[in-house]
Image (cartoon, rainbow over all chains, first blue to last red; front, side, top):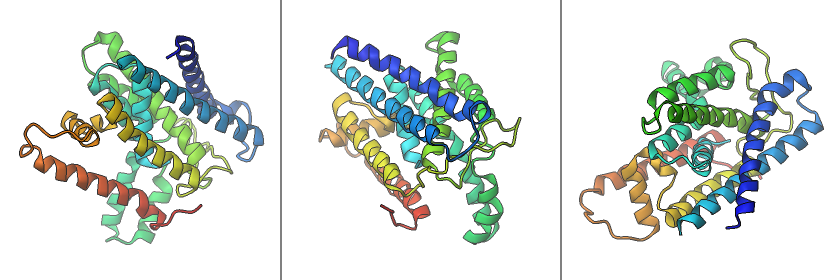
Length: 67
Length: 224
């Protein structure tokens, strides 16, 4: 697998994990506690997809490196 | 999000960041499921109220679920326990790393429940320091299609990864359970089939119980 893609995925995974912590523990206290805010919906779903996709790429990279 | 999804995603997280020890990957995976340990309170309440689901739900589950285990306090507790039980292979630094990953897996669980736990089940991000709740009005309920798709993808991914990599989230149930799954998906013959006969029944029983545990709260119906 392309090493650039793998390192991008690694960076994206850690970015998404940091954002997950911010969205869960910081957002309601610092940004807004409104549960209906559209900005939170957009960011949360984007971060979830980023987390899942980057993990998928890293798992594929681990599989490729074992072969 | 369903329990098996949390377990598989947490194991994949540990695997994708390169944790080498099966024991440490299992610790991170169980840490990712740990916030749902409050289900034990519901089971206890069911026994206490002599299987009256209404009373158990109203008096215990509605009060307890997400309150004590879905917040920063429980995340820290997860880290402490994980540090204590992590493998000694990497020394103190390695154990610290496992504890950090376990805490992150627990935090990811909170986020997944925020997005996929339903709007009526808020989390308590700063409990016990604050009783402030946090939820999203658009959050998917447990039986909605995004949660079902994630669960199916996790189960299919587990089988595929076991076949290709020779290991899977079944590591969480022990090395023998994982070897059994790998043998099944690779259609290999066991070296000593008689020895593992009872284990096969335990694993199939656990799979059936897990399926029932996922479908029972949905009334065995999936909403699309």
